[in-house]
Image (cartoon, rainbow, N blue to C red; front, side, top):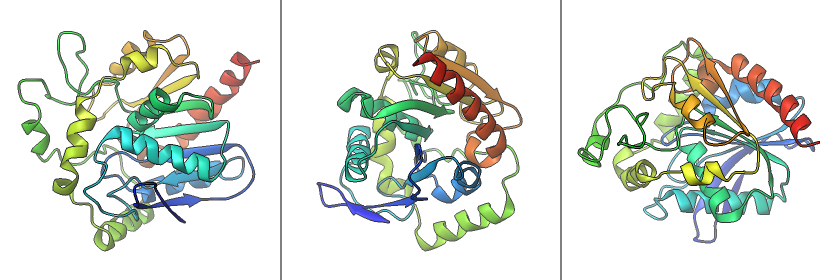
Length: 265
């Protein structure tokens, strides 16, 4: 399915469509929605599962416009409004989590029930205030460091069929990192700690123990920011938790949502 944003960009989303509690999932930068297919199957009996392809990736339009996290947050806001979605469980992998935090900073959390962060710290650049950034990225090498080829994002084996679908999508709708470089720069520059500290909705942080991008200990540092944050570390898992360990992700999210429901009573 597609919709057109207020700046004229066509975005694609997948929607199981049933009238059930709603999950909206957002891939990371350059990520494929095809990598969420196993998770979608696990959740679809109990949830309406929606995956949004961010601008410039997946089946969404390629454009020079809106290469910033605030615009991605507005894209999400327009989707939620278009589909009249409320009590949404937002799941964001990598930059997808940043999109959710940006959404809260701009629009509040009225439409949200809970957030799940998949392997994304609130700050990408390490400095004296934060030691758990992206690989070796510091203010001294930013932004040139972001042009390096960082290799595979995953650690564990990904289902062959799902991997093949993602590969086919990449061949038919290639993601061009150089054309979306300004978005990566904007993503890397953000610091979401102030938003997370004031967040009123519960959040689960799932970190891949073997992530090639982040030291999983960042998740425990996030837990210190807000008492509504829970943390789980996923063993034998890299950065793409939704693709590498979909069943473990499904189990942890279900447990979290049951506990979160008790908090809000």
